[in-house]
Amino acid sequence: MFWNSVEEKLAFHRQVTVGWMLHLLSFGLCAWGVCERTVQADEPCRLEIVDQEGWPVPLVELRTVHGVRLVSDNAGLICFDLPELMEQETFLTVIGHGYGVPVDGFGYRGVRLMPRPGATLQVKLRRTSLARRLGPLTGAGLFAESQKLGEAVKTPESGVLGCDSIQSVSFQRRRYHFWGDTNLANYPLGIFHMTGATTDDLPLSRLQPPLNHSYDYFRDAKNRPKAMVPMEGPGPVWLSGLAVVPDQRGTEHIVCTYSRITPPLTTHEVGLCIWNPQEERFILHRKVWEKSDTQPEPPPVPVGHVVDWKDSQGQSCLLFGDPLPKMKIAKSFEAWQSQDAWQVLTPQETIAAKDEQHAPVRPHSGSMAWNAYRQKWVTVFMQHFGKPSVFGEIWYAEADTPLGPWKSAVKILSHENYTFYNPRLRDDLSPPGSPILCFEGTYTHTFSDNKEPTPRYDYNQILYRLDLDQPELHSEAEE
Image 1 (cartoon, rainbow, N blue to C red):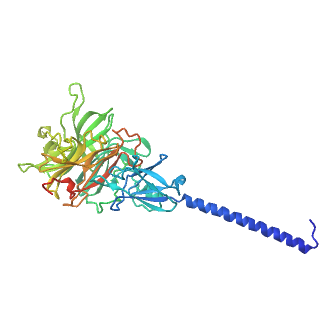
Image 2: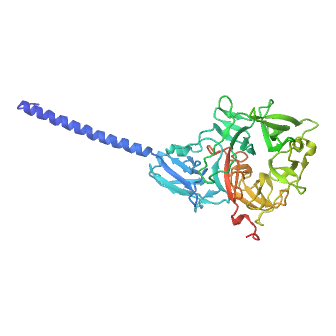
Image 3: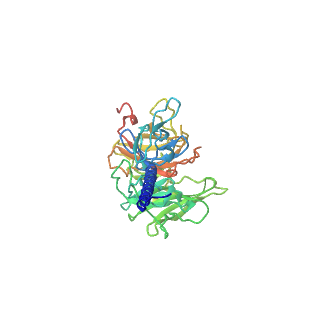
């Protein structure tokens, strides 16, 4: 190319340079725009799972058409971060265990959403159970979805991923809690000799989600929860019949019954244990029975959950039941350790349902307590071989005395092919005289044919509240 002058040549180069700069700038802006859209697409959508009153609902599973499972945390939140479903109508199946939506014409039970990056969507569910879910008391990642959404969470991780049923007593102005087999993060085999913790012996200040309840665990030198019954020998060791009894000098002791278990679930040894405050563990008091050819079955022992009771003679007693009383012992350390002082009781086998169309209900496990609001003894129990879940149907009943007769059982909670066993009344969590009755139980897929355990929640303690002023719980004569 030829130019007539140096000025023409310089002008041409200036045009080329400016053109390339504009082209590069345009390309950069486009690239920046793509990058900006990518960042926006990576923003999660916030899903708030609530009931009709606007309360957050923990432990609700939303399942996509292509099988992705999303579960609300203790604050009822889900961090929806699936890029393939952003900006398009999405159907989510609802599995709520007492919370849900109506079934559609094709038999599906779910909701349709349009998730968008950075948006907040609310999923409103109808509560179908009389009991209201407050949330998990144990486990890890209780606020994981909230944290993924950028919310600050004050509850520290305990190191416990899962644990079996609870035994709980008040002792020296603290509440002592002990759990069965416990899962830790460091290995699939966790602690099989009970774990324990304490809390303030005060009612919860808030009885609605989100729960922010933490435990002071008894820990080992590595700061991990430690075994509470480190006894030599094969098989797990479980505790039951936890009670506080005074000795002749007036000194109180935490006492309980231990059972050593061998596969598949056979009781091999039974005995008595006492809490040692200095060592922060239970120590063997004496062995009561060991499996043998001559004694293949254990004798009656003080197991289950314990309540204080004054009998017709005005004597202070302890009643041991699961849920209904199977044993009565005078409330003293001396009576507790003497088998001759143990009075075996025969509990009521079935409880008539309030709904006369329903067959009498057979209790399997549970607990009872005196309720000041109702001025009656109350029990919450799991039904033996219930429907739709074999070991997940929970009932409530009342009686004038702990020995019965118990009557007018009402189903208060149901599960969708899931287990909820050993419901434990937590009358210590609500103020005295309150119409609110709290209970917790072990939520697990064990003993069901469900092969998909709920992430983070499975094998943990879930707390519920039952409002006793609901007319569905009482007889027509009372209403």
